[in-house]
Image (cartoon, rainbow, N blue to C red; front, side, top):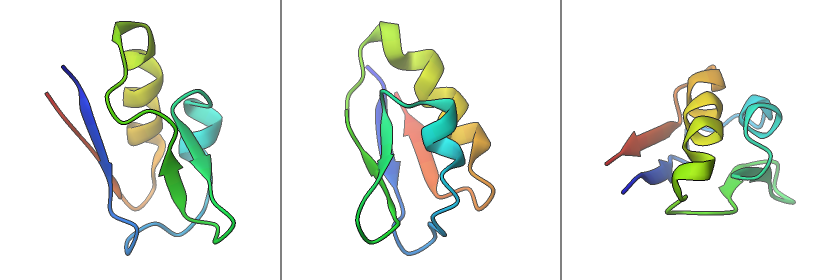
Length: 64
């Protein structure tokens, strides 16, 4: 099972994660990334990994 966490203190609101994984990530009203799905199924693993990789400040961590 994949688990995603976002360090909201690190997030700068670039939105690259949203562009790479629009079904997994979103930007809140405070311009900080938030998760749409904390434990994505296999169909969203690629988007989750792409979103984490796209984060320029490495605020997204994926564990299994």
